[in-house]
Length: 226
Image (cartoon, one colour):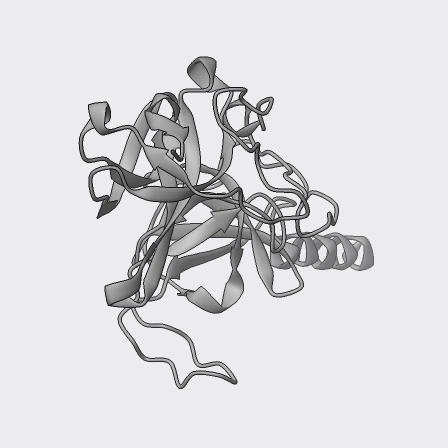
């Protein structure tokens, strides 16, 4: 009897040590840039973009301090549940994450297993509001082929100044990034299907600041460059 009890106890301890099947790692976004071969790092970090797959399209943004529940990793990209204003499943460059003791909901909802590998130009959606829509006839040319951006399109002046938003969730624009000049020229990548395709993912480079932004603006505010 003693032997059976000891064996059962050992098995129970082993299960406890292994933890739940959906266990992951609690992380948060760093406040400074990581060190790389090209850069010493340590610069203030404004945020890190979330992607649909490894080196794939941007689909959202996390700010420094925002939490990320890591469920897996591939080729330097962590996959899991992103908190902040995104609140969904995505990939993010693991070098921008650091361990945290902050308490946030556990386990995160609905990520499932890590999606399979895709080409860098493939758009692998993580939710209904991230599906690529058909190329809109009102914007010429359509989205880039082979990962390239379209020729620039213009922000319609009737829309006034537009703020590039880091996130678009459930029909709501979230996370301010940069206030675009009136009639700014932007690169266009895709539009979402939620709420009839109202949001477009665009790219804007700020020459004076030597930096660029990806984010969402209303699709209705894009027009062909004249």
